[in-house]
Amino acid sequence: MLRLIFLVCVLICVPALAAGEQWKPADSTLYTRWANDVDPAAPLPEYPRPQLIRKGWTNLNGLWDYAIRPTGDERPSEFDGKILVPFAVESALSGVKKRVGGENRLWYRRTFSAPELTDGARLLLHFGGVDWHAIVHVNGKQVGEHCGGYDAFTLDVTDALEPEGPQELVVSVWDPTDAGKQPRGKQVNNPRGIWYTPVTGIWQTVWLEVVPKTYISSLTITPVIDNEVAEVTVQVADSAEQTKAWAKAFDGDTLVAEAAGDSGEPMRLKIEEAKLWSPDSPFLYDLKVGLGDPPTDGDDETASPDSVQSYFGMRKIEMKPDDAGVNRIWLNGQVIFQIGPLDQGWWPDGLYTAATDKALRYDVEMTRRLGFNMARKHVKVEPRRWYYHCDKLGLLVWQDMPNGAKGDTFEQEWKNVIDMLRNHPSIVMWVPFNEGWGQYDTERIARWTKEYDPTRLVNEASGWHHHGSGDVFDIHKYPGPAMPELKDDRAAVLGEFGGLGLPVKGHLWWDKKNWGYRKFDDPESLQAGYDDLIRQLRPMIGRGLTAAVYTQTSDVEGEVNGLMTYERQVVKFDIEKMAEQHESLHLPPH
Image (cartoon, rainbow, N blue to C red; front, side, top):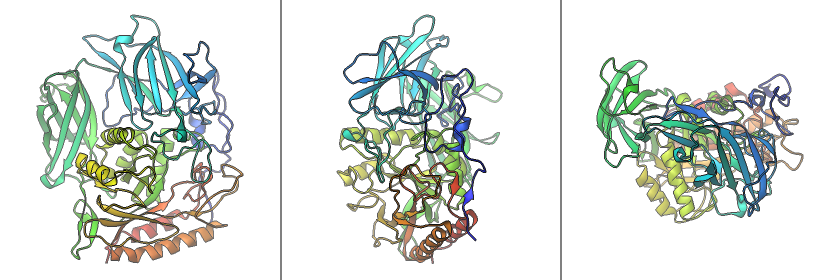
């Protein structure tokens, strides 16, 4: 007898007001269990950039002053109250839960203590994500601005620092949501159906980092398993000439490869009999990278002018014919069928932002427990820690670009997103367009994406308006399943199907009409409906289907077709049965 699986045994309570803090979550119909774990003194304290780690950093998350003012107004002399960064102002966890709109700007203010800077060291200010147009001042001096809601950005604030005392940081943000032309995903000013609440302002971690005058600004890590090599390219800031660099790869505490070279040029780490990364064995090598001469045995890597810690996975994703001449997706030289949910990454209490890192990791863990080996990250880009959890837990990722813009705005942000995420082994496919939303110059965008990152597959447009480019032919069919016709130059994938809906009383976002492609009244009939989809799906693999994406990971606002309820309190399906069913999809295709 199927039943609802309750993940907690008590009702989720509104988190209590922490003693001495000027914060409590705003009223909301739903909270996740992790809302109780939010510490207003240190929300989301984890290091936000797992593939480029330094020790000298300061997290600026916490309570900031905020104000909402008309767009033409100067900086406010007084602020409206406190907001908990990094939760968007429209979210309950921000403590504010107010709309801003395109006619207003959102202002933030806080102070910080500047660390001592010696020997020409610099102080960098990092923003993981700010939606959409941010202007940043330190001590009254504009230090930079940025347009883009999904790509991280960094500003050097050293020259704006005062010699002593508190340093003032002010950020103003303008976001027109769907009244503008910028990439925005599913945000709209009038939420309904499959369109959701706006997210304005800071929604990822803000942090400071001390770096030397010449420092490592980025790494590009490219696994080439056919040659048993990982290529590591170091980019250096504030250096007009090439700088010496070195890299060392480790399996636990064991050094397995090392190389030295010049910045801007690939260093080749020869890794013989490499342990390959896959969903079944998500092995990651640790990586240390530095500038200057490589340290010898017994030397401290921190003696280098600059050094960072990172990691990488050895894996290869490709599309090519099998022995029968049918194009399929291959991972590390083996045909792999990818099955996973459409993952939108929304939360009832934090909107774009999970309450804690454990909450962020939970969706990945549950996806794996249910027997899925892939997730399509749908028209949203996550904080980099989400991809870190996918890397660690072995979840393949198809990465969408959020829709909205056409032209330079879209293309620059798409490039920035690829640059930001390209070292994550979990990401195996780039998806620039979804269902014709903002789609333009499809062949050119797909071709550019493939040329810019030839190590991954490219899905020119998931669902509609196919132009014959990219590596896969992707259709959507609700409830489905279905498969596209086979092509000589692309693999056949089902980019969306299912959408089976079950509204669970007491776990709904609103009392308005709730939406699903097909509705069920109880978990037993829902499970039976899903079972039928999988029975139909299995024979399609033999005919050439290479991947399928079920809608969706969780309910989102008015959508009730999730594997879980919106606040992740209830899993609507039998976990063990789902895992067994999905295991059958990974058997040989014939």
